[in-house]
Amino acid sequence: GEGVPSSPLDRPVLATIDTAAILAFAAVGKASHSGDGSIDFLAVAMTALPFLLSWFATAPLLGCYTPGATADVKSAVLQTGKGWIIAVPLGCVLRGVIKGYVPPVPFVIVTLISTLIILSIGRSAYTAFSEVYVEMF
Image 1 (cartoon, rainbow, N blue to C red):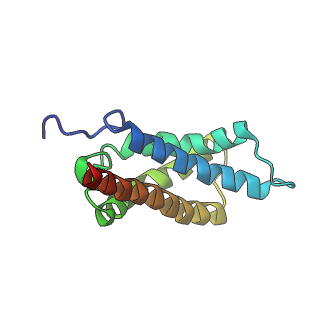
Image 2 (cartoon, rainbow, N blue to C red; image 1 turned 90 degrees about the horizontal axis):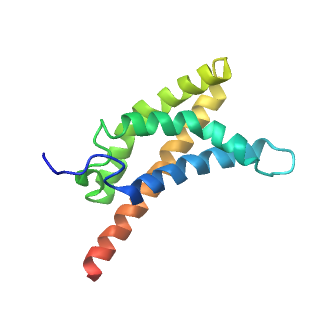
């Protein structure tokens, strides 16, 4: 409907949580592949970039930023899944285009599982805390 927030710009806290979730995925992945567990922030940003682009290009179109997307924890997880099922495979394709090769199957599998978990946790926490905040005031 008219005036219903559906853009990440309308829900900046939620968009920040989504960004942090995708960056966390990339940071954990990069740290796990470094010899000493250190994090190269530029490498993290470059790994996260195709997933951020695909998430913010598709998630709003799929309703991930509407009020109903975070009406309750169940809705948050289901709506995250709706955005994730399009955005993350697209992110894998974009990463392949950027890198110049098809990402290995293990990377795709780990990416699919970990991003779903991390995004769902972030959005569920946002929803749960929003419910507590509303009840307090």
